[in-house]
Length: 94
View 1 (cartoon, rainbow, N blue to C red):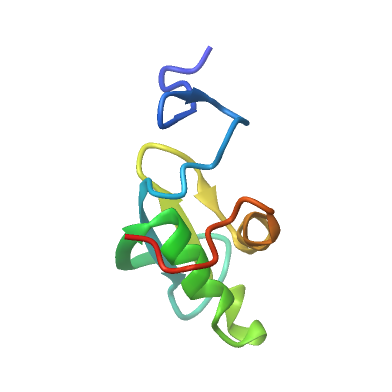
View 2 (view 1 turned 90 degrees about the vertical axis):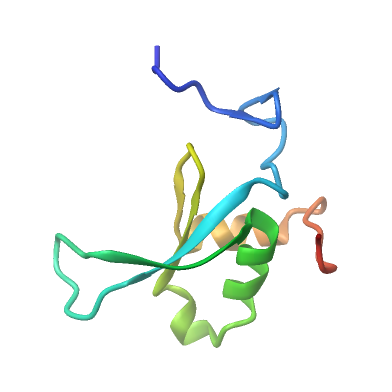
């Protein structure tokens, strides 16, 4: 059992992604390699950061990830899947 069980707004994992949860946008540092250094460049809600990445040119989207506070790192595959969900809030969230 994990020391930090995954819950999203008091719902068990898998019931919803917590669109309004706090998160950071990260960009990989120049140079690449196995030990990429990530830099936090923006804080906002999960939905707003996913929306931000998805509005970048497709060739740049893979350079970003979203780190949910106290949860997992969402890389481009996760970001794209979440953006395509029927319950994704495509309008601006507060």
